[in-house]
Amino acid sequence: MLLLARTTRLEDVSSPTEGLSLFYTDLDRNFVDVREIEKMGRKAVDSNEVFIDGLPIPAEDLIGEEGKGFRQILHGLNPERILVAGECIGIARNALARAAHYANERVIFDRPIGQNQGVQHPLAKAWARVESANLMVMHAAALYDAGEPCGVEANAAKLLAADAAVEATEAAQITFGGFGYAKEYHVERLVREALLFRIVPVTPQMLLSFIAEKALGLPMSY
Ligand SMILES: Cc1cc2nc3c(=O)[nH]c(=O)nc-3n(C[C@H](O)[C@H](O)[C@H](O)COP(=O)(O)OP(=O)(O)OC[C@H]3O[C@@H](n4cnc5c(N)ncnc54)[C@H](O)[C@@H]3O)c2cc1C
Image 1: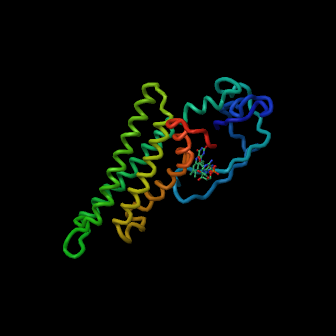
Image 2: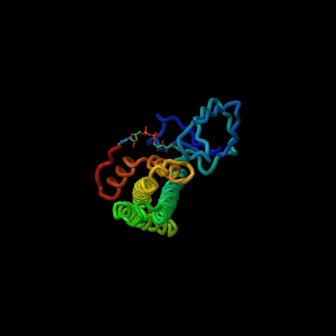
Image 3: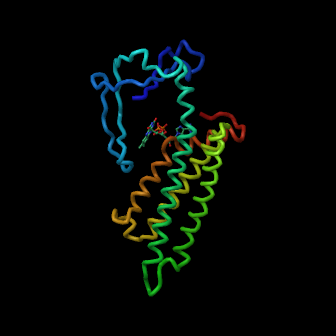
């Protein structure tokens, strides 16, 4: 497992982010208790509570420089946000495509439900939000690929894409009526997956706090 652990006591470092080291080490269950957390979605990947007590770690399992593990972890955070934002765009596009297909096929009172503006407009609005969020995702990804700072853009991309995915999946679900709640049509699972990405890897509140500080120069609030 990849493990970030404190190797210098808090009272001996100038900042709490110093004195943490990164390891790639064996998950020895004699010292590690792993308990699965049941959850509403993301079933393909387990999430667990992990309790580590007295795990011995050989020095050669250290990655990089001792005490600098937090900085090393930071390198992965922006691409993770961009990646998650990309997943949101994919989920949203899939939901909208399913909804448009269904709205063209389902006929009520001799016309497809998709001919009604009340059905069209939420889907069209969601499409516009998704595609504009995608521009921020691509902008952040291009900055990252160019080796440029991309923290604000990566955070904004994740914020916008997750919100767009929630809106798009909800609009898709209502388009299916009662079948939107049925597993058979797959939209309900897209709703569940989109909701996860509002929370992970970082919540909208923390994204907004970061953007307020870094893009607008407001005082750090957390
Ligand atoms: C399925 C799943 C998989 C996950 N996988 C991973 C993983 O692989 N690795 C990993 O490290 N983590 C993982 N997480 C954890 C996830 O990143 C956190 O749950 C998430 O960042 C929120 O942190 P928290 O749960 O500690 O919430 P808390 O920090 O307890 O926050 C609770 C609420 O209070 C709000 N809040 C807190 N402080 C402030 C503030 N100052 N101002 C305004 N609002 C505030 C938060 O925004 C949130 O709404 C996973 C979570 C889930 C659900």
